[in-house]
Length: 438
Ligand SMILES: Cc1ncc(COP(=O)(O)O)c(C=O)c1O
Image (cartoon, rainbow, N blue to C red; front, side, top):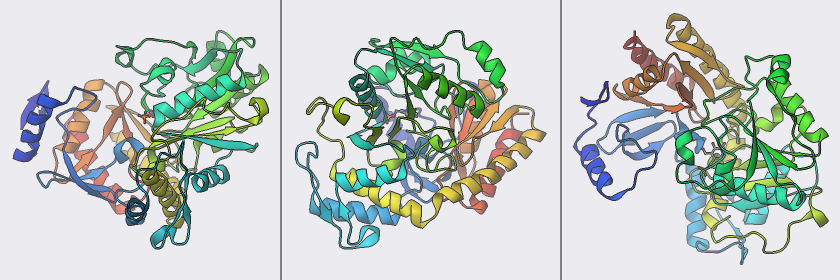
């Protein structure tokens, strides 16, 4: 056991310790913490660290996997790597027909992936796709599309505690943590609105909303339907739908950032399906590439002059690279074959109800909630209690990987392939951890 602050942390083994020693010498700090295991391999819901310790991963690596190392995705990526790997798809498109696996006989190309996303997304207007490499760059691309749609309007709306990325305009519209803004130069005009929390009535929300968006300059509202980094904040859908109508009534665009909620995470393919009216744009990343970096904006085109953006106004070297496209297409097939959206809804209900039972016996847990699916908020009385619960879950064998959100919330986000037995095992680890808090 080692000590971090007031918390006792398990010694994972010699290899982990030596890895972190080297890490501190060569990597500038990001959000990495050296109390976590160093992962060697992963499969399904399980990860193994470099010292051979096993953990259930109830983070899905902050939502980037629906399943660890799905063989369907791996084989599609391998086949693609042997066909065409280094193609700059913004200059030279590629199209390869796969000869085996889940994509047998199918064309793997940016066009095919765009066609799939156009079919899947609940934006019932003429629409097109712009690919990017990550969540933040996709949000930045979405902001460019908004500017192309309404060039004279340069003011954006976003929620308190919003998180949309750590680069340029995506960071301008974020506000979940002050430290994110350190070293950042703001460049966009942003009006900040309170998030319509589930525990707030529509009337209370209307009172809290001091000012309506100014119609002459207001371009678009960027929304996470369930706030991820900000604390797994669950909306009052009535209030969110009311705000959506308000934005539309003054000519604003409504852009849903589904970087964390997309691909079945909330028990529907897209959290946007919880809205009364469809959004104008959906931004995707994380789970889309099953671990291979990709971002995408699916936008209606009838908001754009001549239905498009100017040629060469946006591009890049790596968006929709061959590995990412193959991974995303295989991942979408895999999700469909395994019925993962339904499973997410079903397992999410089960996990939430079991977590609520635990919360009933442990007042240190102050809230358990979700919109649906496997993106569940477990709020603690204090940040110290949440941090300790995370450490105590890592300290057991097998351990349980959890990650915080906001100030004092833990997010439960297992891979969508999680079974009831795995949920039960994770909960028994979690319960033991909570018992150490009282
Ligand atoms: C809702 C949301 N938007 C955008 C981002 C940024 O994505 P990336 O880290 O890929 O830039 C994230 C990342 O956590 C996110 O949760």
